[in-house]
Length: 353
Image (cartoon, rainbow, N blue to C red; front, side, top):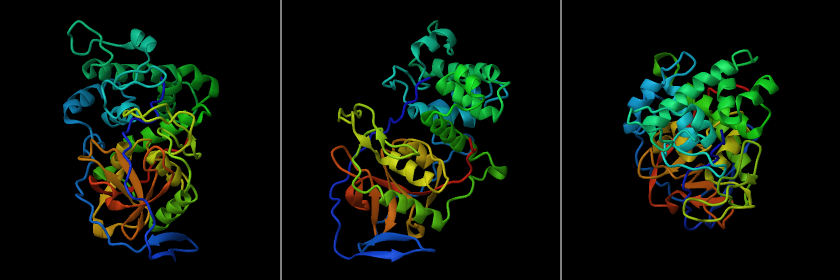
């Protein structure tokens, strides 16, 4: 199963020029961040996107399907299935990856031929119909769980790795293969699936102020790195996918897109976040604008299910971000885009692999 490395539509900010009043200010033990003297811009809205049942911002039209399919076998849950679909396609039924994977569950056509089911009983097995693809993904996960049941290590991680890289790769590696994309994929889905599975429905522990500062410092080390749509991993800059949904090129460029920069920065403090901006919002706890701290994430979009951009708050009404094609990692004011949705703080609680 090919990884859909990024499906978010990265819109860029206008501006991006450092204003006067810039100063380096010490925050925490030995940590330094850049704080820019500018008026704080109120974030619009703090509605909690975490769905109590699924721990994700799942489109309402798919919730019933996910709840039902998520109980196909003991090895999967609605949370896990929702997290996988979010990571694979951001719940987009017509998503396509450069490798040829299709649909909300990103099935390769050859895998679909074998494991696709007619979930809605209309006499067709349609790879782009969520009513078929969602139960097919659940059934395929159950099959993979059986295929890798004797492999050492965490069973859930092995099953997810098999969905991404194939069961034989997991069997040969005796666990999650040492493939950066697969390891990132497994960490991200585990983070999303587990965040609301704590006792009492709690969403987990948010990052500390010091962790936020350290993450921002890591991001600042990447200032000037080129924008690359789909680029960036926990290891650093990487070559992006060919083109954004708006046709803007990213082929052959090593760098970051907005969510790739955030993924990298928080990996430096041992926190694994999902790959896309929308999924990163789902894996974070909304915060009131007056309570924002350095390292909090600021999100842009009209709703929790349409987030298209993310930056890291650095104080003083500014963020560090990978804004758009043909730019570099830079500082921008929070009001550089008009659809500021809100701010949120990343949540701990991933499985180590």
